Length: 396
Image (tube, rainbow, N blue to C red; front, side, top):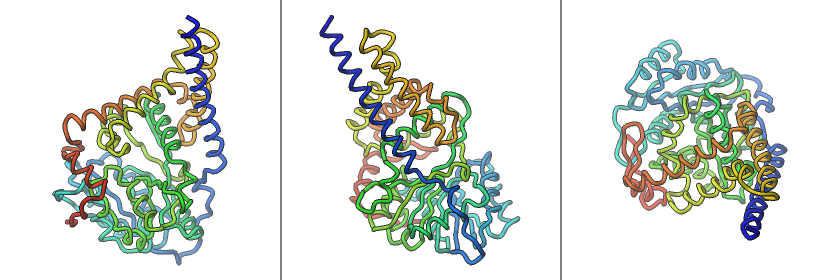
């Protein structure tokens, strides 16, 4: 079996080299990552007017807490436009009650979705069209803000002359496997788009965060707003890319301690929720998605299983790779506000993500469409929209 031993040792060496490379990446990330909490809040009452645009559908459990955290912001010139996007629960009624209590909150109720739009993208576009102010903050109906989060964000945007500031929230998750899966997502997302490249105007990389995209209104409108990408499931990233293409200055920072969200309430909700947009993240290219799934299996699952069935020296190389990966994902977990021990479940979480990628690729291809919250979108139309083959439709 010398040939097999040699092959396994070579594969283990490649896996270890990959883990060392990602380890070096996270060392650099740790040194370059910026935190919103380190920015001194903007002082005084003469600050740029800011309007929060919030889209919500069936968020009755979280919406009141999220909106009240906005209404208690220490920001002097603040308006909130909450768009109830065809909710079937009490979301709209809760928003109406809160609007009666505080005139800074206005509510828009949408009953229909025009052809050629995704629901959330359309809701944000409608909200932005009714939002005055120099800054627009796009957020979700389940995000909880620290009291000075907006002052800190505007201070950062003004000092650095930013047109878009994206803030990554602290993530709250129930259950060890869900926390590990969120930590794995943080690990993969950071590797896919290095945050420090976002600031470089010569680089194409851009990051938008659905929980917190703070945009200058003039830059947003110059880029065409959400009407520039009406059928993009990854609307937050699409917004950042649209602005950066027009020469906008963009940045992403960590919101640890200033911004929090429960991304999904359960592992099944995570798997089902990402069904709508994971294929979009791979540009609707099946080969690219399945290659990524194979790479995760080889690089992030195999090293944890191989030490039990391979001979030395491959056994020890795989074991070293597994230890390094668990440590790195543990650090990614800490960066998301999760316990470091989430990294110990990384091989299981990586399998979850393999399943998400494979399912999120094969099901849309088989059906020719994606479905999200009762609305179906044809895959062909989504592809055309991503490629920019047609002008955006009018908003209702």
